[in-house]
Structure formats: C-alpha cells, structure tokens
Length: 503
Image (cartoon, rainbow, N blue to C red; front, side, top):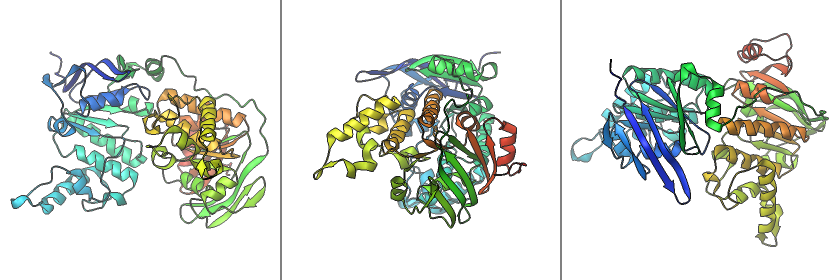
C-alpha cells in the first residue's frame, strides 16, 4: 500500500529579515485527515512559517506543495483559493459589519448589476452557523458578540470553502468548555472529509487529545516530528526548549505575613454572591472554576472596574471604599488583566512607555515627562524580571507573549502594590515562558507580596498556589490548602459539589 499524498508540504523554507534568520530550512508535511500539531516557544518561527504558507510573506528559499503541486502563495486570498484556510488567534473581524458580511467578506454573493444577494448571504451563513450550534444569527453585529463568539465567527469562515488544509492558531484561547466541544467536533468532521489540519497550541492536554503527529520548531529550525501516541509531554518539552521542566510544587520556605486583603460577603448583582476570602503577605491564593464562575468579575470589582452590590473590602484590616481603578491603585492593589493585549498593553507603544504608563503624572519635570526617570524604571524591572528585549525603544507588540506579560507585571510592580492580582497569567504563552512566569509569581510572594492568581488551567493553579478557592456559579464552594487539594476534589468543587469544608 502506497503512502498517502500529503495535502500540504513545505520543503526547506528559509525566511530572513535584516539581521535575523527567522526560518532556517524548515520542512513539514500534513496528510489527509491528519491533525498535525506545530509547537515551539514564542519566537520559534511558527507565526513566520504560517505567514509564508498564507502568502503574507514570501520565502527567501524553499518550496510549498499543495498535493505535490508546486505553489507560490502570493496573498491570503490566493492561499484560500488553493484551499488553505487560516483561523487566526488574533481576530481579524470588522466590528461594525454583520456576522454574514464578515464570514463572506470579499466573496459576497451578487445578483445582477453587482447588487448583494442578501437573502442568499444570510441563508448560507445561517446554514454554516447551524453546524456550529452557536447562539447568534447571520444578521448579528460582530461587535456585539463576546470574544468567544467572535472566535466562532472566525471558525465559520473556514467552512465557506472546500478546504484542503485548515490552520488553527490557538483556537481555544477564548472559548468556553462547551464551545471547545463544538470546535473539536468541527475538526473531527474536517478529518472525516480528509482535510489536513495544522493545530498550533501551547496547551499540552489539547495536543495529546486532538493530534496525530507533533512537529517542533526551535530558534527558527525544525527539531523533529513525533507520533503523538508514542511520545509524552517531557519529550515534547525537551525538543521545544532544550531542557526538561520541573513542575513539582515545593512548599513555601518563607514565613507568611499578616492578612493584606480580606473580602467579606462581597456581591455584584448576578455575577457573584456573598464571596469571602483573605490573602496574606507572602501567599499565593489561587482561584479556580469554570468559565462564568465569577472569578474575573471578583478581581474587577476589587480593582474598581465594577461596583459591588454588597459586602466589604478590607486592606490591613481596615475597610476601604474602591469606586475606580485609581482608588485601587492608591490603596496598593494592582491587576494584571486576563487579556494583556487588549487591556494591559498599548501594542504600538514602546516598552518603556508601557511600563510607566500608570505613573506618568508622578514622573513629570515641569510640563514634560522625565525621560531619565522612565528609563530608570524600565531598566530596573527589565533586569528584575529578565525581560528579553533589545532596549526600551522596542515596540511592545513585537515581543513574545511571555515578555509582554512581564512588561504588564513590571508596570504594576513599579507602582509598589501590596496586593497583586494576576488573571490568566500564562494564556497564550509557551511552556518555557510559563515556567518563568510561575517562578516569578512564587518569587514575588517570597518578597512579601500578597498574590491572587486566577487561572483556567488546573496544573497551573495547583503548581503556584498556597491555597485555592474553588468557585461555581458565582459562589465560593470550597477552600483548599496546597497539602489537602487533589485534582478529583478540585473538579468536584468547581462542578458544584460541596465538600465538608466549605469556605
């Protein structure tokens, strides 16, 4: 029996930029009906390789083959015409247009005289949306959808053509568990039609659940391809970063201080009710729960982004009234938000200006901002957090995800907070950078910060936390110490099953 012809093959792809060899002879093949993972640290070359495949960049050397036919991808539209469809991590939707207009943008069905056939447009769109089991229709304005539903619109775009290969770039980053099930069903249907899938993700559990083979890039070079069923996380990690990671949880060696933050019976409408907890200096308090449990909303309320409908917030055992982020910052509370690119950074600004943005008023010399003071702050936290950048002038949007996250953390540490809240600290970050962020969180606690970590990843919250608050449907169900918590007990708690130790 002859081997199947790959639906897609990249051979010896080289891409250089001034002073940088971003891709150095990368080869990759995707078979019909295969889910092929592409993994590597941020900066390994994955995005550059996909831009070459999508016609956004032209390679300096190498060749692309579609079912063994040599092809030069001249543009994203050309790639789509060749049956190569991308579902991007960074949403590329027009907020003011309808779902239907976004899905068929550039390919709107036309009647005579060049008029749009709206009836056919909406009917075709609703037929696609039905297969995705979403709760919106073709006429819905995209800007009115949640980030998760906007991601489903991106996925719907791939179903408008008869694709040969579909590239999913971090497709579950913004999806709920229910939406992930729909996505995985869509991928299975594409497999059944012999469509080749490239699946880019930092989430190991998804890689080992969904994929057939795993190819790894490191420093722009191809490091090997593994059969998923025959490998393990440690082997994949070694290929990615050149070393193993120790993810075991070691007990805190430092003494915990006094209670820095206490919340009593805090409520915010229907979002969460009667939530109580405390966090001490030197402690990492983890929050874990399903999407919609209320974890992020609690953080936003403590930080003054939402108005509470009941309860108290105490700092150093004294009640405080927080009505805005300015109040929170003045009281020594900082929040690293869930979406660092939309909420934590100004991607077009340089690293220094992002780092000092919250304290510009305090860094003025007469009518001007003191450049020297800003650079001094940036240099201090670049060294302290090991931020890898050529210098402060680097545009922050050009940094890797891990270094962007360090800029956000450094921004708030430079304000010298007493309480640091970190929401989804490693979302969209590779495994090597995750380890660095985890070590940083533990180091901050050892320095006396009171740290709250909100995470959707169980291994993460188990690894970094001294105590864990489990939430279900807007309520605290149970509180665990690091010594007593187990995966099973945590899963039971976030599913609404109350234990005998209720917080």
